[in-house]
Length: 82
Image (cartoon, rainbow, N blue to C red; front, side):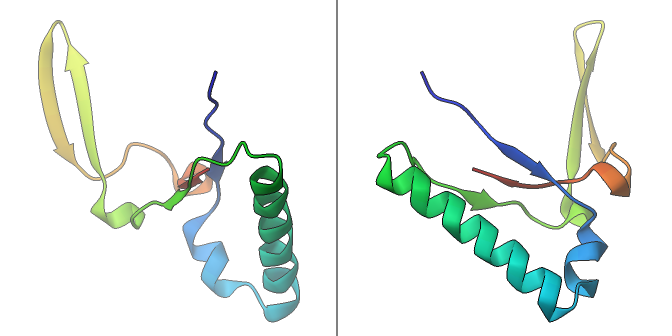
């Protein structure tokens, strides 16, 4: 069985973070990644593209509709998959 961990964050918040919290965040991610690798359960990770490059696909009554832009609010953007 495999699992997907999705991280949600305010995209603007990452770049506005000063070095103290940013360093702590990076250290926590690194430690977690190393623990997964050591446990031989790590499969990979990818950072997602910025929200302004998003495309939304909706299916209503069996018809697909492709829209430019996200449907989520900035407070609930998906930042990465692990």
